[in-house]
Image (tube, rainbow, N blue to C red):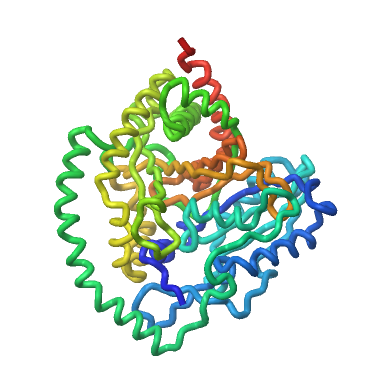
Length: 466
């Protein structure tokens, strides 16, 4: 038995039929590299070998009424791969529109909480002869970093690479706990909460005025509720829109080195440039910068070893109001420096510690009321979108024997911020996944197609050596 952390459980409590809190990945594959040639049954057998070794794919939620704490993970003793792996064929002509349309449809469906929280679709019939895999996992089970790690566990450095070695007990997640054991564990955890709360409050009381004061003086990240309103910011439904793009990592590094900034600065500059054109063509480019929430991994800073999600976030100002691409880079470099310093004022474990007090009933009622009353359209905009930058494998990987040609991550969207842009480096490429609430974001291909142009703008604007 392994109890979910409060942060992991929060993604369950905040989920509704419209605010779907799973993460997805579209993976395009060169099936010609599979030893013996691609075949669905062969790929499925290889997947079954890997799944037997990776507990995260076989665990399910256990949350009976007498459990007073967060749910627990247990082994699914009736695990059946056929419940999770599906074979589909794209309709003709099998191009990017059809592939993205299928991904959007699957991304808009909830996972079955009675089974392990993942689904995998093997997609055939692509016009270019490739095969695609669409993997969906609940955010309660993975964050960006741990999700990328799970994909590497399914992969290898060569088509015939042996199964991975995974530390710890790889055979079993733990049996369903006895009723008395679970009740005792949850009561003990519940009884400790007042003391844990008392320990956290003084740090929060000291932090808040200092943190807010820094923001108000313009010495830190943008202040929430100051973002300009766009059509991306409203109440969402379960309908999704998906697009993707692939860029050259060498070009991104050329811009980084020329301007003397970070890769993350360049990523945000790319997104800013693409959004500027996207919103201009829709006739709604605001005069003020957009505000993006940027998730930040704290895997290397946290002192907590419990839970799948080890993440924090900061607000970034996206200078979509500036026409000069070089000016956008310089503004981002300075504002990101201030935002990161501001963010580091907050302890890496603060979000996880406070999330321990999250409650299913309170969170569930709050998010449903927020949606039903359409409050996202009635208060100032907190943030416009989510932009995430996840480090990926620097070398080519082979997923179940097939070489990965594209790895496009797709994060969740939320009421009030109906667009998520997630960027992942992958074997010399930069793969960008775009997902939005369909009624708000509409067709995302114009935004995806604007990304290469935004990179070309930055290359042309980059200072020349000497």
